[in-house]
Image (cartoon, rainbow, N blue to C red; front, side, top):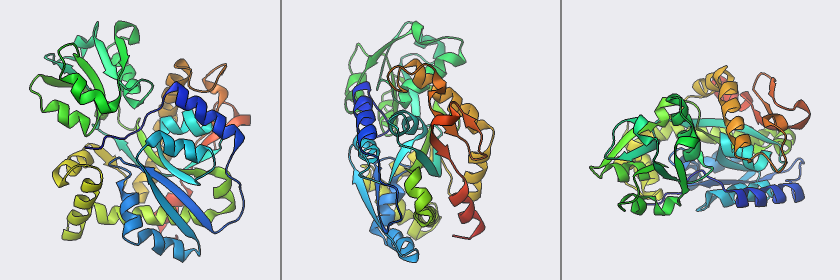
Length: 357
């Protein structure tokens, strides 16, 4: 199974920042656009849309071309976007803030596609209570959404990372690591979670459904490119909701689409649908608008930026979590209003909801 997902490292972050400072996507009116995406249940629609003419349909409507490229390396897709080689990319709210935004690239979330609702989990060996994690060594991808999930799990029991020992472990090695006798606790994501839970010793004691709406999957675009080319944003929204309609349909076409997306992501229909069930997909634009405009999102982004600051991931020498401004859909800003680099907008999703794309 392919297990690419959303994570970063200090070295990669530094590279992303260097790239972002040196080569930012040129903002201008243009006709040709490039979109990057990587393997994850909530992003599989982009590959399907490219292969089934949905991308071309919406690009043709606006007289533009959109080239959609799959990356097998999630971090590389973000670095390429940060370098200006792509106009848009799929990423999480956490990584959008810590890589392109921290790298100086003003970035806008065009589509809020879903949030993890059980796909990410803390698993203990032969222990079935969250409190049992105290004193244990926890294997996870350091500075990833798994690390964030662990921090939130510990907070929920009045504990902190001081009560555990974190061991950085590649996602590619996680399943094999769990099978060894000295690994007793892991935090990871699907399909790895499902694979590990097949072992009778594995007990899930916390997952992302307990922090709903905090690990968010997005399609973002360079803010300056978007400003000069609003039709690009409209096309992205049209592509997304057209594909969502197929992906979630209770029909032969829908089943075939899910089966195809599952195969492309390294699993089968049952495996893909299991991942979908642990994902809150915003297949209806009105739901995505409501989520993006809610007062819960600023609270989530405050938690995320605080975590990133504590881990030193908001740039070298950042004095506080306020160093990067985050603009919400109502125009309010978390952090430095003079340095807004990450933005949420409902503009394009709202147009889809109103049928005005």
